[in-house]
Image (cartoon, rainbow, N blue to C red):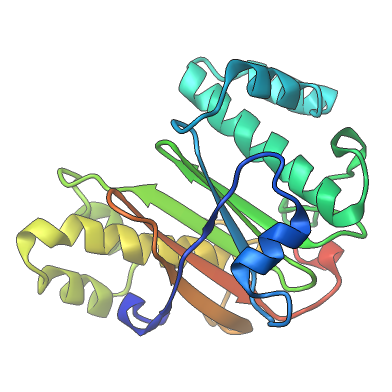
Length: 236
């Protein structure tokens, strides 16, 4: 796994419902580049009750059941914004109505859009990230910083001894954030390949074609990984 300090920085585009796909591509400057489109939605910035109610109407019956299964409103809002805005973005991309966009599961359980772009979604705290690419499988992960996090037991289970040693060499006040950045990088890699933490691929990040460390502002860290272009249905 590449070290976070080796990664190119990528800043997401703040997205508000109603912004068109051409406007997004122009703002991102990636319409002529082989780079994912990365959007950021802040749950605490102008997300109104009517907007949330409108997103509910775009969900499938199964998605509405999942929404109702969350006990806390914050969790409901994060799921609703993540899935509802994803549907709006896919609808813009495919020139369909959001409620008509098909989202299926691949062989390893990763969602994909038949006939549409590759995508991945992550959220933490008030921040929701949506990553899209026309053909490359993606993995994105965001984590809200937690300075008091007891990170060492987690790191020793999931990271290499060299990575743990490198984290311990950081100033104590920065270690938890540095661990979360390494965690995001690992999660993004695994999500790009459709793998879970319980069954990571042999060879680590082999086959991935791009890595980015995300510039998210104060309080958040994140990473994005992209794989080789292939049939979307095989990237689950």
